[in-house]
Amino acid sequence: MVDEHQLINMRDQRSCNGCTKCCDGWLSGKVYDHAFFPGQPCFFKSSAGCSIYSERPQDPCKNFECVWVENNSPLPSWMKPSEINCMIVRETFEGVPQLTVYEAGSKLDSSVLSWIVTYCLNKKINLVYQVGGGWNRINF
Image 1: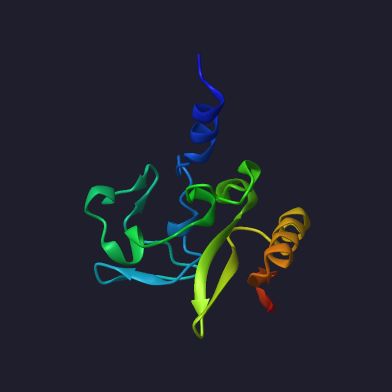
Image 2 (image 1 turned 180 degrees about the horizontal axis):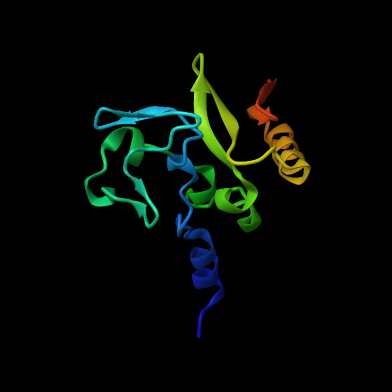
């Protein structure tokens, strides 16, 4: 039988589990001299995921921080990147932390935008988000 503490820990342990949005060509970076960028997926992405997962570099791969998979993520389970076609990432701009929402396959859904804007307003977190490819910002 699972007690309440174990259930909370199980809920908080998230994994990519088939989601490859960070490798699909929505972000920019370089892995072992192979560039990826919007429209160009990572060279090492395969139908099964990352073909070099055990040898992937620290930067950008291991350092990438998808908010959905963070321990004790503030995002609800329904906001998995592969389900909502966007990625929510912690970044820093001019020394100030922010959440950045990258569209990843379709226009940002209004329910996702509403949730993340409300969360950032309540927590006073700067937010940068994409809608239809255009960038928007809310600062505190």
